[in-house]
Length: 93
Image (tube, rainbow, N blue to C red):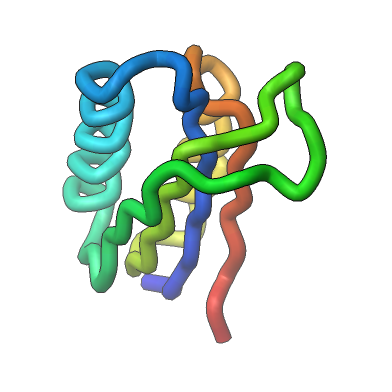
C-alpha cells in the first residue's frame, strides 16, 4: 500500500447538492480502495487562471493509502465524471 494525495476541482455552477454528490462518490471510492487519512473540502476559491471559462472552483483535497494500481483507475473515473474540471493525484514519499 502506498500513500497518495489527490486534489480535484469541481465546477461550482453545479449547485450544492451535485457538488456534495460528487464529493461523496469519490470519498466512498477512496474508502473502499484503502484507508483515508484526510478528506477536506476547501470550498469555493478563485482559480489561478480560467478553466473552461470558469474563474472559481470548489476544491477538495484528500490523503489516502491504496494499492499501486488504484491511482490509474481513479484518474480514469475523474476523466469521465462531469463536473470535475481539474484533478491531480500524487504519490507521497
